[in-house]
Length: 177
Ligand code: SF4
Image (cartoon, rainbow, N blue to C red; front, side):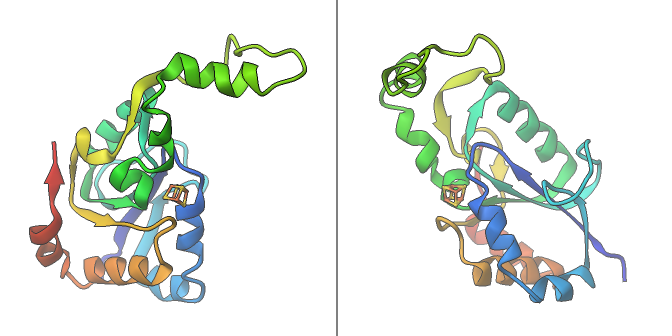
């Protein structure tokens, strides 16, 4: 049987959702019988490949680089899964939305820093005014909420995709741009 090509992507999140992937424990071994990890922070692949069957995305969209990556992934992915509350609602990254980028940066780098307070001149992403969930930018096929999402729910969703039951789930949950 042809293996399903699975990718995971980490946008503006804390990596906790990827920890839930690992929390599937020995069930990961079961999944590897049906799945190839073709791109992920967990594997050493630098470029997002073509023809990916399923991509799980952790984190909100907070920068122009996040937007660029998300659009590329959407074009190259069959089933796109918003993994965790940051991807589903904005959650923690969106807590800055009410104060604006400049005030948030000043708060983080200047107001709480006793030694040499300053906003770094380089190395920061170009932040959007708001951190937003994935469906504000692209169509999302499945939503797995939770902070972090339960490993059981993640395993159930991936099993459904492998078994070809994802189309039924998508009918109920597909949403977005
Ligand atoms: S949903 Fe929770 S665990 Fe996942 S990236 Fe956001 S803050 Fe972290």
